[in-house]
Image 1 (cartoon, helix red, strand yellow):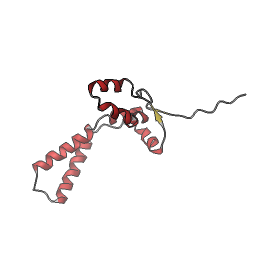
Image 2 (tube, helix red, strand yellow; image 1 turned 180 degrees about the vertical axis):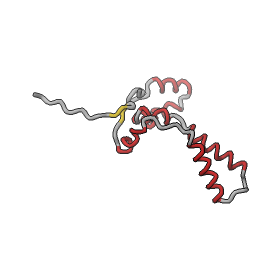
Image 3 (cartoon, helix red, strand yellow; image 1 turned 180 degrees about the horizontal axis):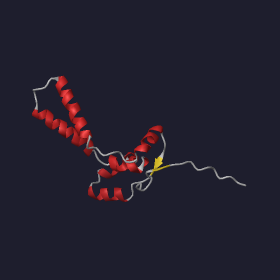
Image 4 (cartoon, helix red, strand yellow; image 1 turned 135 degrees about the horizontal axis):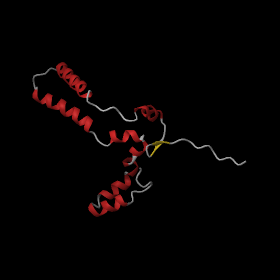
Length: 124
């Protein structure tokens, strides 16, 4: 569920006590902070962290450090490609993957649910 719309409410009050410098930033960037709620709910789990990207690059970095100085540019590219392909076998499938094309097409989501236009009420 989206945090209080249009304002930061208790979140800002809590941060004003802990760190008064953080509160103005929360207020100024509020819409950017809650952008995740304008995407399908199934995608939220995947967007909360960067562990997938970090773990792949950690594997590549570790391998490159161990072989430092012994690689040509071509060999390094091949090793990185093979490491990423190997790591990709353990990736989780995207939840709500069927909605990805809708997001790209510009379909609007609110609180994780697709917004459908309501027909105008007609007087009889």
